[in-house]
Amino acid sequence: MPSIAPYCSCNIYLLLACLITGSFAGDPYVFFDWTVSYRTASPLGVKQQVIGIDGQFPGPILNVTTNWNVVVNVKNDLDEPFLITWNGVQHRKNSWQDGVLGTNCPIPAGWNWTYQFQVKDQIGSFFYFPSLNFHRAAGGYGGIIINNRDVIPLPFTVPDGDVALLISDWYTKSHKELRKDVENGKDLGVPDGVLINGFGPYRYDEALVRGGITYQIINVEPGKTYRFRVHNVGISTSLNFRIQNHNLLLVETEGSYTVQQNYTNMDIHVGQSYSFLVTMDQTASNDYYIVASPRYVNSSKASGVAILHYSNSQGPASGPLPDPPNEYDTYFSMNQARSIRWNVSAGAARPNPQGSFKYGEITVTDVYVIANRPAELIDGKWRTTLNGISYLPPSTPIKLAQQYNIPGVYKLDFPKALMNRPPKVDTSLINGTFKGFMEIIFQNNDTTVQSYHMDGYAFFVVGMDFGVWTENSRGTYNKWDGVARSTTQVFPGAWTAILASLDNTGIWNLRAQNLDSWYLGQEVYLSIMNPEIDKSEVLLPDNTIYCGVLSSLQKDQARRFSFSGASSVASLSRTFLVMLVITLHGALLR
Image 1 (cartoon, rainbow, N blue to C red):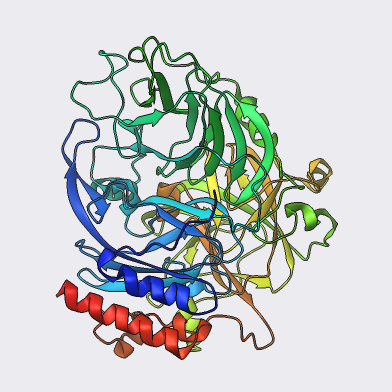
Image 2: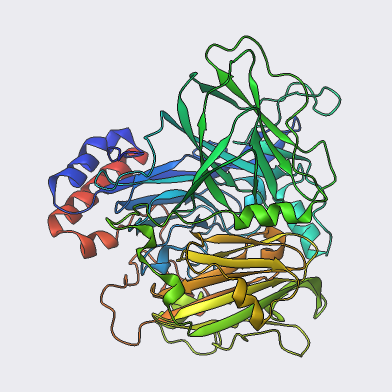
């Protein structure tokens, strides 16, 4: 979509914020002030506690334009420590803002912390979510739109509207109960339902859906084309997305424009985001179903159903839901995933084609074959592993330990393949080579589809197949137009290969997106260090929260606003105005 004017989340200081973004040279700043708190909702007709942002469930959409500086002050009104991570937003040379335990101390209950990062050279559809304590099972998530600048054209006609759909499996148990179940080795089981934008299903079948449930309605105009940004923000279930009688023209996934192909439905795995163009080309004799249904789960009651309502519709949606793919066709979803290709002729966030980066011609410098295992008992506790290691978060974040040269917090010895030894719990990192080119093969030895995500990077998905990966498997790789994205699925009893150019310095999280697998230890961090002094890497923020062995450095930061990056990227005049805005805003809050 075209660039929009900078938005300030508090209208009271809109004038000053716009003065800051408009009066000085450089990239604009946008400001958001969020309060994270519990609220009561009944998405499936049962009252339960959810996590909202500024009272919204899901949270507000972060709508910005590439190269903007984003400042988000987060007040934690929960009863537990909290962090937000920005799924797919790359934070160039700024892992301080990643919002995961390896780089940030948690925001204590009752405190606030201000994130500041630049959405540098990115476009596309992403989302944010809470990264600690199983919070994502209760909400706390929302969409991110990064628009292209006006000088970078879209590879398709500007849509008539933009629709964000956050689809998720949902349980009526609280996140604390689910967390305890996972700790005790209990499987999450079949979800109680699927939500679309925090709403339960339309009552398409009175025998399956109870009455009184509020559902999502998407209002559209006949003949117009809309961009649907669909995110699977759930915790463990792959979902099949489809719209009754409408084609889905895939145009983008997680910041990369794709070869434009029509699909009748799309499997969207945990943590993945897609953009589809949908043209309202039906007769509108009635409304139409928008469906998100579980894959590989034997439950008909769990489908999420919203309503697509034409302005000239003659009646409600009716009849059965559009058919999902054959549940027993194990190759359908893999072949669909293989069909998604990078649009190498489209412009990216910079004024050059996406395909100008010839990834297939770069020499690989490191190879990691990362094998998972289902949850198992290690030292009396249920844990999951990658290459036989279950990650143990240290009390002092890795990035802080690295900054202060604290020994013994972590080791740079993560194995390149599964070792012939008993599994163990450890804080073991991948020692990445700066500007190296890493090949990672995920081997899924579990019985369910797993998704894996790398913070700070978009990687190229070059191959996937059933069976065990071997050296000969490289002969099947797509070395020309494999899509670049940040989250990839790995099917049970199968492998997926990715290639990543390690040009983003920092400490970056590589994790299972399936929340139960991640929570029990299926993650690792990559340490990407520039051997030379890198003046472009963002320095330690002056609002850093300290914990672990550095707790003595902590000062009271409750309701403290800090915009440390402003002085490093803008003039002193801008810094003065930023502080003036914050001072006035803080006074108004009191």
